[in-house]
Amino acid sequence: MVTGCCVPDLTREQALWSAGSRWVAGLDEAGRGALAGPVVAGVVVLPPHSSCAGAWRQVRDSKLLSPAERERLEILIRTEAAACAIGAVSADEVDRCGIAAATRMAMACALDALPMRADHLLIDWVHLPEVDIPQTSWAKADMVSVSVAAASILAKVGRDRLLVEMDAAYPAYGFARHKGYGTEQHRVALAEHGPCAMHRMSFAPVAQCRSLFDLEDASPDADALGMEGTA
Image 1 (cartoon, rainbow, N blue to C red):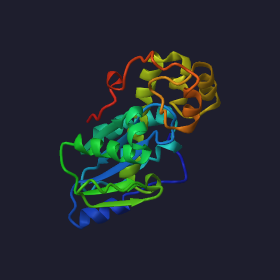
Image 2 (image 1 turned 120 degrees about the horizontal axis):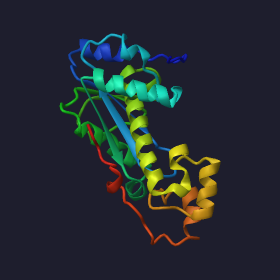
Image 3 (image 1 turned 30 degrees about the vertical axis):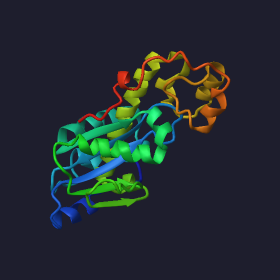
Image 4 (image 1 turned 180 degrees about the vertical axis):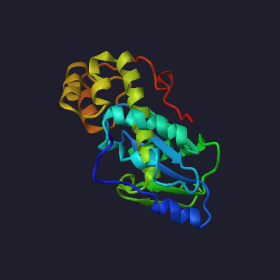
């Protein structure tokens, strides 16, 4: 059963629905601080004038949930949402444009995958100046807004699945276990094997190892692992 002291609600969504915004979209990301893999964004549009019942009553910030709870809630969210999608930006793109820009790109990709245009965006921390849609952004929005919390679950579950695929292609690093974050196990593997094609070469712990190893033997690229936006 989902527990936790931080219980998001629909206060912000209800205010926007009452003001005439029909399609209110919550956005959040996963993987911003990882050393490897894509940054993934989730977007969730609740049915207008939803209530905090059923699936929405159970939703929490993904960081407060166990993997099993996230998997279960992801199915409920995809079933009950008016629309939802994820977008992913590869480690190569993170290196090219920086993590902040890559996060915005992933969110824009997720929005593009929606079947309708959102009327207003509720976003955890990030602002999207390139997106011509009214938006509200604030820190820890995933602990306050049901839409944003639901988006955090989609992003986390979607990214975790990609890292499991990465683990099969690069078994030396333990991606399925640590999901690309800088755990001790991951850092030991970096020191022993050097970075692979899925690592973010611009991140300091990876860059420190890179010059010691020959990276010419690249394996599957980001597209081969399905790192693109999907509804």
